[in-house]
Amino acid sequence: MNTANRTILITGGTSGIGLALVNQLSKNNCILVLARSHEKMTTLFGDRHNIHCYCCDLSAQPDTERTLGKIIKEHPDISMVINNAGVQYTPLLIDEDFELKSINEEIQVNLQAPLLLSAILIKHWRQHNQPSAIVNISSALAIFPKTSAAVYCATKAALHNFSCALNYQLENTCTQVYEAILPLVDTPMTSERAGKKISADTAATEIIAGINKSKKIIFVGKAKWIPLLSRISPTLVSKIFKKY
Image (cartoon, rainbow, N blue to C red; front, top):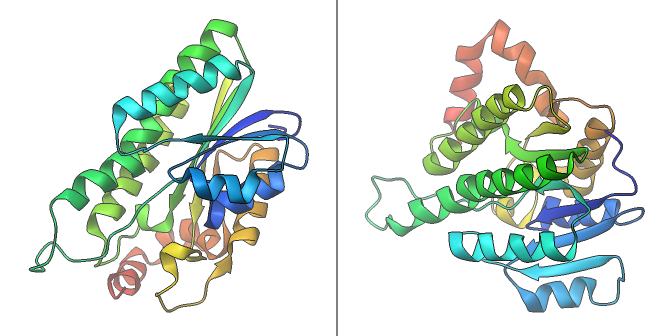
């Protein structure tokens, strides 16, 4: 699918991969940025006429539904959503300082929000028979979980399966579904983690290239090795990821 000359909604577009996607896609598109901080969006995009900002807490369903309704009303030509926003907490469930509220926030932001946005936009697109696309930003942790961040890994695994099943549902419609499987990317979320990381700009470039080539599953960076390693030695890969 061609990513040019579209109106594209990007969640979590004020840092990391989301910001890189906004910067690259804004060259020839109208970009709708959805994030929590109005101040940060104003600072980053205040003087860019083709970028429109919407403040929203994706962990709150009513706020998510209300904001998306406003977006559709103001930009009925929206034809792509990139579900990029995500949160990750690393304490183990067995740790004394583990907070139960973190479970809800991770599930709501990482999983519930992409499902809600997809469902609402699909209804809009079907009413107008509009060529469109859903892009879900996932992780290698969806396939090979690590010891820490169990809830995050679970949400990405669920998002992966949702993307696959939604692809089946929309097979003969005007809406395409893409999923990007990412390796370790240098973002604020991973700033305190060791390991070789790719830049957010590199990740964004590969995601966009994959969409333009209509790749249903876009393996980014070292994640390209996952299909092969899953066949050759899935046990070894699981042991490697377990250490993190």
